Length: 310
Image (cartoon, rainbow, N blue to C red; front, side, top):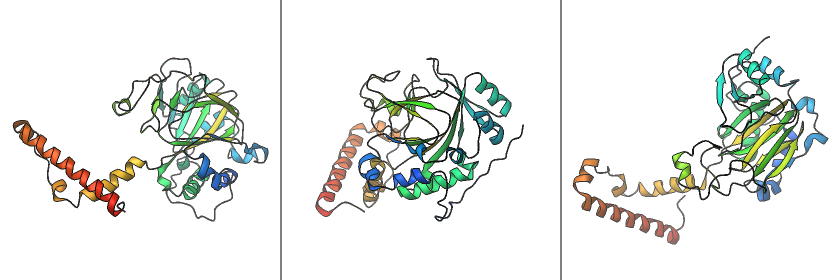
């Protein structure tokens, strides 16, 4: 049994490097229809297996255990989908990862582009197509025995998943309880404080009757918009690679613009009163905050008259 050292590829490839298993997928993403009608709006299944050589897609791996043996540790393992709270832990050795896999646990290898140069190239070219920094795209390799997979959850990223080996069922549906979440969440874990502030309805513990389902086979792929609920189940020994795309939020754009505007006003560059000062002078503190809020409204109103800040 041999393991390989991590191949930490840090520089983007040349744009001339366009010959690889990812080309048919990224070519579909380059079409105007994808940007106009699909990205951020609706799931999309790439049925590329009809003309993609699946032996090239899987980078030469034969099965999940072959992946573990050739990549080496560390590896994250995820407990079987038995209805209880999912457990994820990191194991350092291939023997531990193999034992977990044989016991029904799935495995995840984060930042797989650091170990497989082909995935790094695909990541960088995807960033070029989407016109976003390549560092905002995270990659992962997921391995699961039959019946294994990920529990019902959503991600705070757009997801592209390409099936390399085996078959896997995806079940997914829109997140109507917390659209466009800022953090990931796995059921039935406790909600993070920030997430609980914008949840509008109780989260389901499992897919509803409105959920959609698709089986991905080698060469097929799935795009899921930001925040979609989903769960996966391997029907056969399964290997897939994912690209998680973190696009800047509208919130980030306006907070940046607002900061650029406020820093021109001395009032907003000043230090805040110390907590003890605010406690000793509550009326003055409240009056000062009201004044600051009114000034903020004036600045925003000026945007409407003079145009948006750059």
